[in-house]
Length: 260
View 1 (cartoon, rainbow, N blue to C red):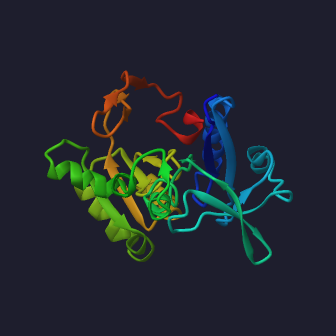
View 2 (spheres, one colour):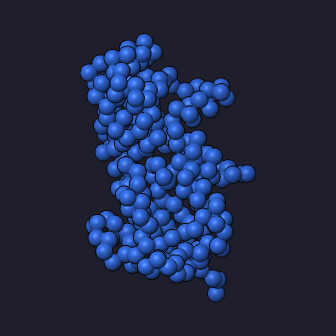
């Protein structure tokens, strides 16, 4: 009989996409074959506490965390060992063969979690540190695309400090670079959280304030009337691409509600 693989599925997290992560984790957990995998569920609270126990996903969905207990992954090679925290003492829990981070947004997709897993020298699913961190910051990623002569939509970067202390000048600078409509986005967040479509100056002011709630870097992009096609790519040395899919949102654009 083939030995089962021990896999830890991590979800939740500190970002504004905490609830989206729970939905993704529910989907992943539903298709992991129990005949092939022994699954340890690890939930991370909004405050950043790592918890495990029985039925972790249900506990997080219902915000009933009382029966869960702390779990620790040390940032050093320990053969994938997870530890429970009993008082002030660490006790071995189980060795993981693979970590599956199903985290969205900051502290999950931005290279921070990947860095921890690299330090722990444990195999994990998904992109590495560099691609995660570069891909997370929309403005930085657009700079990489421009450097490699790949066309991207015109954009302007604003900082939270500019927005809060010099809103009038910030808006004038944006209007000089991009015609309406524009999209205003937190630079380091996904799932359309904090994104606004702005058709005039009043919309832009509100959109900048909204995006600045989530990130100190705010991206403003020129609106484009175009079809949106998405393709997933999987693999490293021999990558494969998925079938192309077209995004057809029910809202004015691909909002959080349209996605989920």
